[in-house]
Length: 114
Length: 113
Image 1 (cartoon, chains in turn cyan, orange):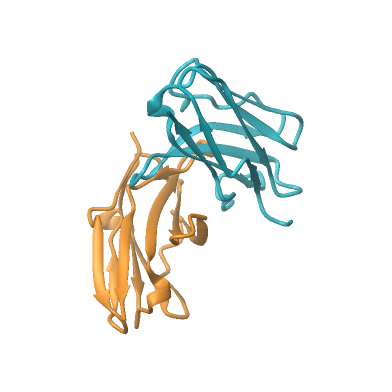
Image 2 (cartoon, rainbow over the protein chains, first blue to last red):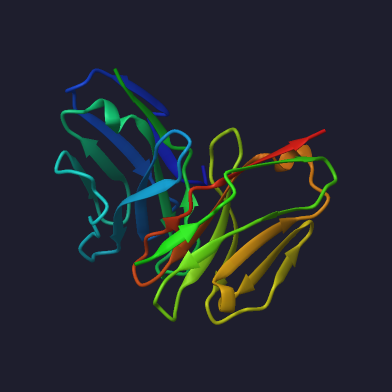
């Protein structure tokens, strides 16, 4: 498809398990972002990859969260030792380089920690 | 610090009414971008508009219009003759020096038939 693709759509896991969320950006978009949206709330920035520059990790809430991106393609957000407060929708967005470029979002991964 | 405030948590209107969604932002940067996104019940975020800090010209797109006023740090969004399909959560967002979007808390708009 032409849009940002995220998988899985839904993930239910037990507290303490590790999870990996995947994002496939729009082809040609060199910037990629991860956000978290808790129920009924706005989006919180997590991490930002821009081309070959060092990622901006300033939004990661703890060292249990990490993300990787290979070149200008797929990104993986990993949450280790999940906690119930990690339950949220995790949204990925991509854009062309340039801070005024609109970010295009995927449908998100709904993560539920039991 | 940068911040976006959407003071209206929920708005309910009857179809065909006009409705304005308020957005107030804070930043010390002179160069920044403002955005509006729509999040319908299906969940996906849809980009609606971008405005840069040097362009205060208002914009109209069909039933949608945006009023950007730097003097009051506001970027309000008006839907004219609202329709049921406009029911969604609307987010205002800001970008300054880095690429990350700073979102407001969102306004839930319910348009009743």
